[in-house]
Length: 262
Image (cartoon, rainbow, N blue to C red; front, top):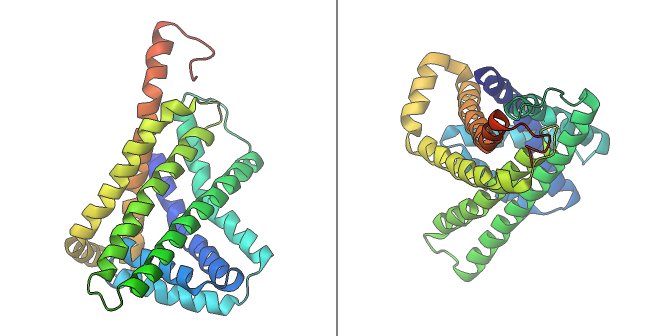
C-alpha cells in the first residue's frame, strides 16, 4: 500500500496544476465569469497557506494568459494528463477488493476521463456556490469585517460534501468489479471527513511544516509537501477502501460466493 500511495501522490503532483489550468480557462474564456475565477483563487488560498498559494496563483495567471483562449484539443491533452492519478488508484483498489484483472489502458482512460469530468463538474458547482455566496455577502454586508471569514466557512461547508461524493464515485466505479454502493457510503463519509481534518491540521501546523520542509528540501519544498500530503491522503483513501472490503474477506473465508462483492 505504501508503493501505491506514493505512486498516487506522484501523479497528484503531475495532475493537479493541469487540472487548475483547465478550470481557470473554462471559467475565464468560456463561461466569462470573473467571480468563479476569483472563487478558484480563493479556494487555493484556503487550501495552500502562506506564500505557497500566492506563488501558485501568480504562476497560474501567467500560464492561463499565455495559453490564450480556450482550445478544445489543448484541454483534452490536459485532461489526459490530469487523469493519471486514477491508474495506480484503480490497481490499488482492485487489490483491495481481490480483483485479479485490471482494466486495459484504454478502458482505464475512459473511466478516468468520466471521473475527471465528474470531479470538474462537482468542483465547478462548489466554486459557483462559493462565488455566489461571496457576491451576496459583499452586496448585503459591504465592508463587513468578517465577510472573508464567513466566505471561508461557507466554502469549507460546501467542499466537504463534494469531497465525500467524489470519494463515493471513486470507491464505487473505479475498481474493475461490481460493488454494491451501500458498502462504500460509510467509508466515503469517514474518509472525506478525515481528509478535511488533515487539511485543518496542515493549516494549524503550517509554520512548523513550512520551516521543516524548507530546511530539508530547499527550492523543492512545495513539491515535497504536496507529495507527502497526497501520500497521507491516499493512505486514508486506501484505508477506507480496505475497511469497505473487510466484510467481503470475512464472508469469503467462511463460505466463498461469486456474489460476495454485492
